[in-house]
Length: 412
Image (cartoon, rainbow, N blue to C red):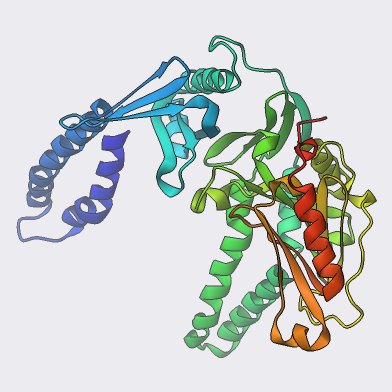
């Protein structure tokens, strides 16, 4: 597989031009020249593939995953499985033809903490993942994978509809159609400066998510939520409830008319691009389904039952704060118009609680309360609160965050 990837790059960048370039000797000379250049590249690619295969060894030793890398200069990493943040099975498109998979182990430590074990057989990858998860949970490695209960599957038609039913997407589509009509009617190629960016924007906003989240399924198991999705590259994730730091319930304006919502999350252990790829817990579903999934994550608490106190009468925030409130476990903030967003964080997960006042708020006697989660897409805050209320909110959340009874546990 490694050699194949190298040869594909070679053929696109150099091999194909060698074959297509005209020469005085004709096709025979082109073929000889192509062969003379390609053979060394094949040798190098195969050597690189074998070297890469030899340079990675791994084993499970006691309760640790030991990974040895390098041939001439070896480096050994020992990762306690009890501290592993996530274990995913990923199957890129090319590997699926050969029934291969990658096991990606996310250890604490930031951008360079991910360990990728490739390429394993499909069944071997699943078995390794189950063994590592069992040891991480304090069970024998031979323990069978925990059973699961189906929770929800996103229909592909609903996924496509949700991606199209967004105001920015509809505006970009109208811009694309209008620019194409202008170019056809007036024959003005300069309009491509508008058409091409609009087309690329639609590909990024509609086509890419439609491919990434195809076949999205959620199942519930004793070890957490299991997610499976992907058309070209399939991915299987398990999210233990303790790794979910905050949740955002997103309801775009057009979705609210049909009762749809999207769940976004901040997950401990993912960093950088991997955090962005793992930030969607449910791309689209009826709002009741999303709220049911939030209840499973957060001690069966009903987010909608938590009373929200509206902000001060004079509100200057651009995101139209609707209200904020808390119970003994969760802090909830809701804002947005015409779309709406509800951010939820267990107070025990708050890394800090702070109050900020900008110059305009200072003139009006207002403040914003921030409940900071680990790095991720969820930013929980209550904007434009009166100063006295904001101070009381900060003190209350700070006291609740140190109560061990507030620690979420799956389904309890």
